[in-house]
Image (cartoon, rainbow, N blue to C red; front, side, top):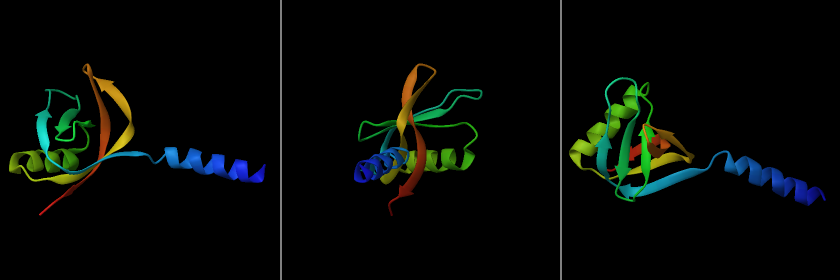
Length: 98
């Protein structure tokens, strides 16, 4: 019984830190509305992630990555949210390749 509880607690904690990761991907589309709506990026892997409006540094890095055409590793949260009729994962981190 103790092993079952430990296993369940490990599974529960690992799901809290789940990622949708796209390695060596490029940004195919960059979608941004006026006002305070999040920006969306569609990756070459097919994953769509969003950047909350308050995340100015992440927004700038994503836009620079898109404009340069460089590949990167993208980490987005596992859960999806719908904004302006678009589903996407919240973007957490970008690691740009040289």
